Length: 248
Image 1 (cartoon, rainbow, N blue to C red):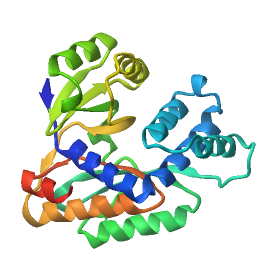
Image 2 (tube, rainbow, N blue to C red):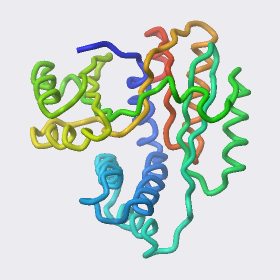
Image 3 (cartoon, one colour):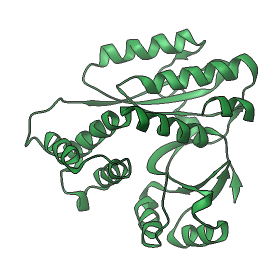
Image 4 (tube, helix red, strand yellow):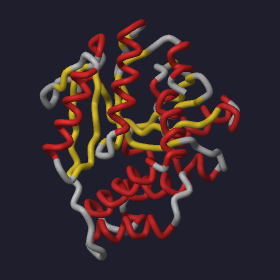
């Protein structure tokens, strides 16, 4: 079992806030709609849609909402056309940031993102400027209280996971994108509850930030994810524990 940055813990706390405010539903509906548009409405034949629907159900989204989002994606119901875009840039202290967006107005979205980067001492960069610092991986997070360490390691690695990492109150199961579904399904069959399961970008290494830079990067990433068009933010920073507690 290897160590990792505190990013997943920050994301875990942020997801809990979003769920309480209902903001999570808006982001999930967009993801379901785009997944259905790109890969069809058959959950069994569309891994991205299957993951989005499972995440929505885990967040207690009503089935009617899920079905409407799928039908809007397949064209059975009229809906907004969302464009999928990734933005890249540098935050305070040189931390690399990737922003995944689903938007119906690219000009509005890039202006909002550029404004936040500038506001907190970062800058929006060109395509490819930081993407090389990340790997596309499957990431499944499990609360430590829900499963024993040895049990999770044995199950995950047997199912094809690359690694199991430990961070604060969470275990992180890391997979190759093509192995993500079978690992997630194995944990599901063993009735191991997951906090989150998604294909995401994981940093190859991290930059430690303290003081003003650490506070600014937390504000920047939080405000980026507050934008309605932003689906997720990946970053390669690590921060002191006391700042992590403030982010809760």
